[in-house]
Length: 208
Image 1 (tube, helix red, strand yellow):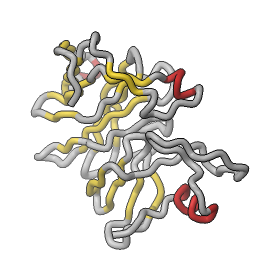
Image 2: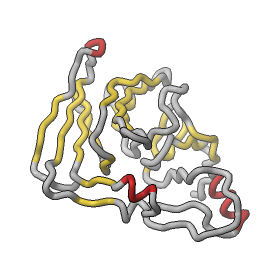
Image 3: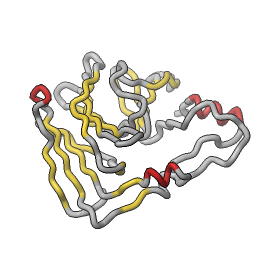
C-alpha cells in the first residue's frame, strides 16, 4: 500500500502545508501560489479496468494507477469523450456478461446536466448514452444496473451552489430537503438510436 502521488499531493508535500480544500475543510490562507484549481483525490473507490486501476473520487475524472507499482499515471477522459468539467461516479456498474462499464456524472457548472456513459471493456471506447438537464446539484452516490436499465436514485440532498461560490465548503452547503421526493430515473440501456426516454418515478423522501 502507498499514498498515491498525485500532482496536488506532491505540491502540498513540497509546501509542507495543506493547499487545497476538502469536502468539509477549507485550506488555510496562504501566500503560496497554487498550481491547480483544485484537488482531485481518488480516495473513495478503486476498480480494475483493462489492466490498470482507476482511482475514483466522485469529484473529477478517474485517476489511472499502475496495478503493479501503484504509481500515479494521470487522469483519463476515456479518449476525450468524458469532459473535464464533469464529476465522475466513484461507483460505476459493470455488465456481468461483457464487462462494460456504466457510469454517470454531473456538470460542475450551470445548468449541471447529468451525463450517462457506457464504456466498452474490450476497446475502452466511451459513448454518451444520455444527457439530461437537472433542476439543481444533488448528492447522487450510487446506481443500479439491470438487464435492461441503468438506474439512478436521486435523494432530496441538494447543494447550495451559490453558497459554495461565496465560500462554503461542500459539507456546509449540503441540505436535506424533506419536502421534496426522492426520484428514481431508469435509463433504457438500448437507446434506440436516441429515441428511448428515461422512466421517472417519485418516491417518499429518504437518503441512502
